[in-house]
Image (cartoon, rainbow, N blue to C red; front, side):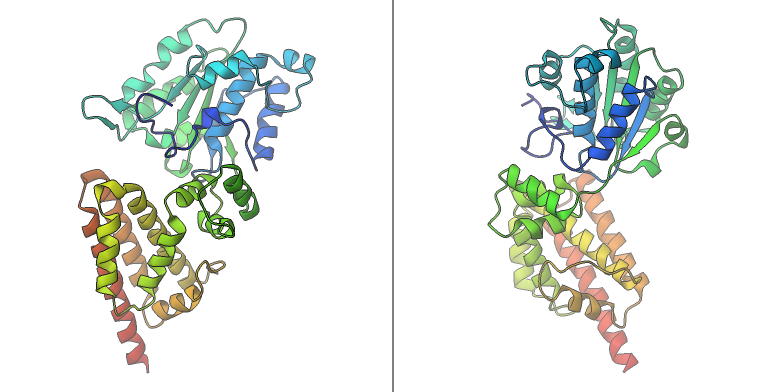
Length: 375
């Protein structure tokens, strides 16, 4: 494990560069393999999709493959049929140890002065590419830049990267990871070949949970996988943080609305609002925000999917009855902004939780009033 916190590592789980396999993204793997073997490998790939579905794992897997085989001819000679490499590959071990001279990773750096991760990838990080691509690539190998994620770049760093993409170095390759490609500069998107990774199925996520020895009870894997909505990374986070129990508590708090169980709410807020419970707080607020998104979508006619806790659909119908969809959209957005501000400004987490349920209570009361007036 790295000496300092890594912005691209999920909790205490293995880093994507350490992953020996990738489950559920065979189509994306095949696209990269065939592009390389065709001798027409594009110089910049934009790997897109939801967070936690394997984009970074795929990027490192492809980097290991390229640095091990170096050329299509060598891959053919060794009868390579995919992106896997031998376990004793020297290049693979170097990449895992972050010591391969032909691989450079750009990510949010750790600031030793503040003892925190930077909130963006600054332009100074992108400037590291100039000497990196200026070095010899060795015996015909590639020089590979992985950006995880390009969404974290500010305007200056994005423009600096764009200049590199406009004049790509010989044998240079960019693997750009993006969770929200629609927010990127159109000029960056236009210079990349986009490879969209698909959300994983619930059975596949259940398999990943079992392989990772996640701390969940027998029979809970399917419920956790359903909560993850196609993201293995999210499933692991939910499992590690007791997310299923938190989700059940959340539904228990929502069910009595518009009457709020104040003692129960304060007990929860006291427990997960502490500085030492940051992971539980993050998991709970993400689950709450996502559930409200399902509520809003249900109000717009989109089926909410299977229930995790019995009675969820009835609860949604109750909250939507008599209230405008716009009202719930506003609450959803308000809570989302509060979560973002708390992350940036170090706001009291307990206060964020209490405010969120106060807004929910207010909307539910308006909903109930609307329903009574309609009668």
